[in-house]
Amino acid sequence: MGIRYYAYAFDNDQTEEALADPLTVIGSDPLADALGLEPGFTQGVTDFRQSLTGRDLLYLDKAWPYLQRLTAPPSSGAGARAAYRIFEGRVTYTDDSFTWRPWVRALPPREVALIALDLESISDHDMEAGMDGVCSSCEALGSELAYATQLLHRARDFVHAVASEGRGFAYVIG
Image (cartoon, rainbow, N blue to C red; front, side):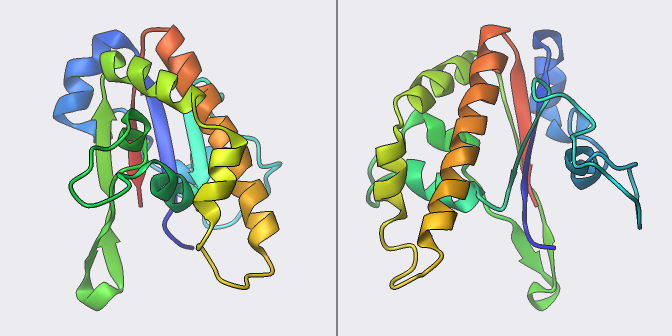
C-alpha cells in the first residue's frame, strides 16, 4: 500500500486539543476517507470522491516526498522555508522495517497563515527544478512531475482555504 499523506483541518477552538494530541482530529481510517469508503473497509466500490470535503481533508497520496524535498532546507544547517512544516516528517520503522509508526503533527492557525503565503510563492517552474535528480534517465519523470505539481496545487488550495478561515490542521504521514 505504501506510505501516504493526509491532512485534516480543525476549527480554531480545537487548537489546544489538536496540539496536545493530533490524532484527536485525524480520522480513524484516512485511506477510507480519501477514497470515499467506509472506515475499516476490506472491500468495496467507490467513485473515489473523498468522504470529507476538500475544505476538511487534503490527500497527497504518495507525492508528499517530492513536496518535502522541494521545501526542505537547501543544505545542512540552513533554515527551512515555512512550507516545509506541512511536509516534514518520516515514519519510524519497526519490526525490521516490516511495519512503521506514522509521523503526526498539528499546526495551529497562526502557522498555517505563514505556510499559505510561502506555498503561494512556489511556482510550477520551482517544482520542475526540484524534480531534477529524482531519477536519472527516468522515463516516467514527466508523469511524476505532473502528478507532484497537481498535488502541490491541491496543497496550496487546501492551506489557503484553511488559513482564510482561521483554522489549523493536523497531518499524518503513514
